Amino acid sequence: MLMQAIILAGGFAKRLWPLTLEKPKPLLLIKDKPIIEYLLEKIDELNIGDIIVSTNMRFKNDFEKWLSSAGRKNVRIIAESSMREEEKLGAIRALARLSSEVVEDCLIAAGDNIFTESLLGFKRMFDELKSPIICLYDVKDADLAKNYSIVVLKDDGRIMDFVEKPKEPKTTLIGTCLYIFPKEVFEKINEYVNMGRDSDAPGRFIEWLCKKMPVYGYIMRGSWWDIGTLKSYEDAKRYFAGKR
Image (cartoon, rainbow, N blue to C red; front, side, top):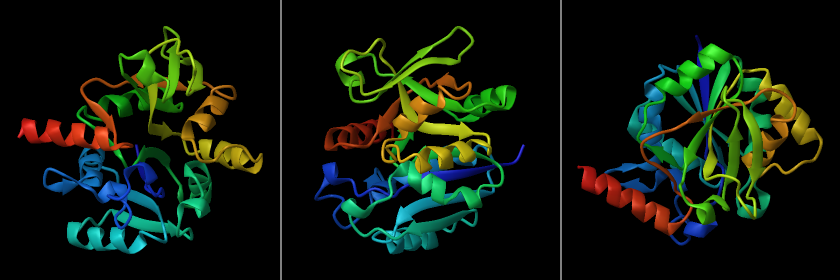
């Protein structure tokens, strides 16, 4: 089954300043390669022919320079016009802007995701259900879960409850910014954006989408990092340094 992929890399990563003042977060190094390469190695397992890196004009040249050295023929860079944090589109508006580029079902991933599990099981679940699938991860810590979207699943894997940054999490199972959407979901993305809803936090869109149609969760095993803070960045660096 044909599929495209979009890597979201349009943020300015203020929580990681000064590391990300002059370099986009997905191009920060872990061990000997940039974060985005770890993600692309997982996407490679799915034999996807068209991968879009969605970034901003501030870091467009950085990604183009990286792509030239990486030599990847199936990756293209598309940049929106923002040059600073206050101008950025936000993840959901960036996806809406790319809707005309999406002609197949689409894997969507935040460019700062690093994980150890294969994506093949995630893709198999999508192929079976033909519905939106969200990759989930158990952080096993209620205080940590407050910083994410928490998810409650039905027995069949359908998402029963999806709450962005709850004060009192019902579970420690969280939603990651790793999705597979049927191409028709991009109509919902445009509908959501046109309603003027929060376009920066992807979890807000997923919370809304779960009320509109069946959305399922795939529980990821292994290790996962959301490189949003210096601590998570250092944790991932230590893991991969030790592994090697």
